[in-house]
Length: 79
Length: 79
Image 1 (cartoon, helix red, strand yellow):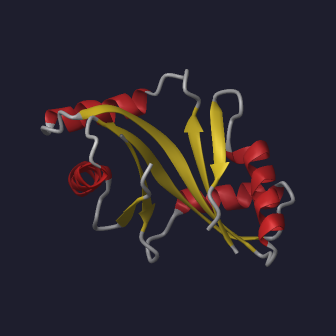
Image 2 (cartoon, rainbow over the protein chains, first blue to last red):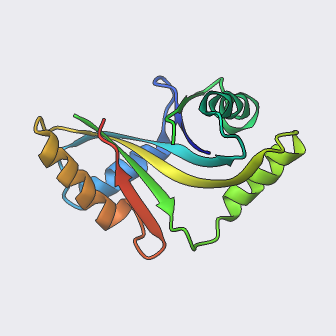
């Protein structure tokens, strides 16, 4: 079963990477962009047929490795 | 309007970053993980109230800057 996870910086944490992308887009003429924030995306293929169990496992991985909970949030978006 | 974009490596492209995460998870005892692929996530705040127009603009940004279409795919997942 495939589980997708998105890890983003918390709202109050500065995102220099996103800012650079924002500047680049502005330079290319995309003037209507107000803000860009960048995050990480993980597609996890788990050998587990039960969706709930797979999601629990993914959550566990986020807490232990994939996300730094001091500055990042994660959310699991199913498959 | 906020638009979310996920950029992933194409299926046939090697993902060393994902492999490292996979190895790390294995080392931590997550033995049921079959594969992990990592990608990028962008949250774009566009000054545009029409959803369709905003998505079109996001698509344009992906083609021109956010994704390298030779090796990457992108998908827009609304807000």
